[in-house]
Each structure stands twice: as structure tokens, then as C-alpha cells.
Length: 294
Ligand code: ADP
Ligand code: ZN
Image (cartoon, rainbow, N blue to C red):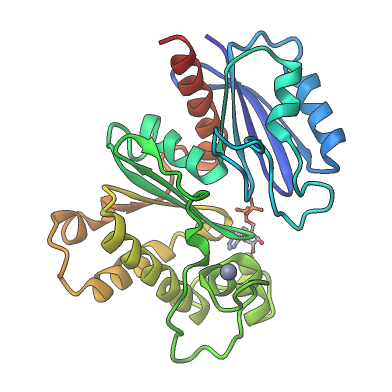
């Protein structure tokens, strides 16, 4: 069976074809421009591909409430042309197949829980630390939705004692995204994040903020696995620093082997690597297919 997948990002769109094993069989990528032009490229790509369902993991915020008149819209993004744009309704006009629709990070969490680092677990969190910070929440076998969708990239942070940087979030200043996303790191230190040496104090500070957020989410949601992806997490030296921060913050209060001897297997990189987003969208499409045919 062929499933279409769209990883709809604010910078680029990735479209691909996958199968029911989560294997990526084909992919293309193009820059995100005005929605009419970009969606025309999506439609052209899938036109002759014979997919039986399409999953879309999208940048946000998006409307994922099926009862809403704006279900399938990108909502309040500052990205020119995309605010209140009906992404899903437009694609539905072109293809008469079941569609899965969720946030990019919820899709990635589902992909990891289906075929990746959290395979066969009923809960996991997927964080991305890149241009922004996003969190996908998978719990009791479902992507978590609510008023809107989780926005855990914007939780408040306690400031590192040596940090005088004001933070880069346009809404909150020094929320998690403001302090720990790539653009904040780069403004604070005045260099590209990818060029900071592995032993630079930036990474200890980064782990301080990420470790706080993870400890909070462990207390709140008790996930069985936490997966950390995005460009910043290419700095693999962050993982041991973050694990230690989580333990220091929790102080043994949450009793689980996963937080002690098992922590190296609890806070991990994506099992699906840099395919986590696209494979997550395949998983969304597969769920939509199964739901339509059950
Ligand atoms: P996006 O969030 O736009 O989907 P990425 O997850 O690739 O894309 O994030 C891009 C950001 O990640 C860049 O702004 C940069 O600050 C940071 N980044 C990318 N590569 C690295 C790297 N090797 N080390 C540290 N930071 C990186
Ligand atoms: Zn914020």
C-alpha cells in the first residue's frame, strides 16, 4: 500500500511516498512560498502517485478540531500569506482519499511510537529544538489534542544564573523557545550554533533549559520515552548534559528505573533520524486509512 506524506514546514515542504512499514520510498523537497504556489507543487507531486491516503504534519498553529469550521487551517502564523489559510480543505479538493492532519511534532511523536525509538510504547514526547521549539504529545495511544494542541515550546523557564540574554520569543521573551531554540543561541553568543565548539559553555546552558522543560513534562505527563530532535540536537554532547539536568531537577522524587540506570534509553535522539517528520506523516496517513476502512 502506498501512503502519501507531507511534512509542511515554515521553511520547506517535504513530500514523500511511504508504505505500511514506514519505509520512505520516494521524496522531494521545495521551499515554502505563497500557499497557492506551494500547494500546487504538492498536488503536482501526488497527481500520478496512486496513494491510498495522505498524512500531513504541519507547522502551526493549526486547527485540528474536527468540529470546527476552520478544521485543517493554518491559523495565526506570522508567515506571509499563510494566516487562516485552508491547507487541508485545498488538498482535499485535489484528492479523494482519507487525510490525516496534525502538528508536525504530533506526527513525529506518532511516527516514533509506531516505528521508531518509542515503538510499541503507548506514550512518548517528541521535542524539536530548531528554528523554534515544539512538542508533540502521544498518550494512551493517541496524539493529544485539546483547546488547540500542546504548545510546550513556550513554557516558562527559570533563568540560568550566568545568563543575561533577554530571549528571542516575540510573545514571551525568555520562554523555552526564546532561550533554547537555535536563533536564541545564535543571538546570545553571536555565532552560528553549528559553529560553537562542543566544550563551549553554551551547551551547558542549553542543557540547563532543556532539562527544566523535560523535568516539568515528566512530572505532568509521565511519558514512557522522550525523544529530542531538530537541528540543535545534532550536538550529541547535549544528551548526557540534559539527562543529568533532568535527574538534578527531579531529585529522585519520581521513582522509575527509566530515570536512573535506564536514563540513556529514556531521553534519546529520534529512532527515525532526520526522517522522523516525514515518517510521522506516513503514520498519520496510515491511521487515516485505517480509520476510514474500519
Ligand atoms: P526547522 O526548525 O526550521 O525545521 P532545524 O530543525 O534544522 O529546522 O533547525 C534549524 C536551526 O537549528 C538553525 O537555526 C540552527 O540554529 C540550528 N542548527 C542547525 N544545525 C545545527 C547544528 N549542527 N548544531 C547546532 N545547531 C544547529
Ligand atoms: Zn514563547
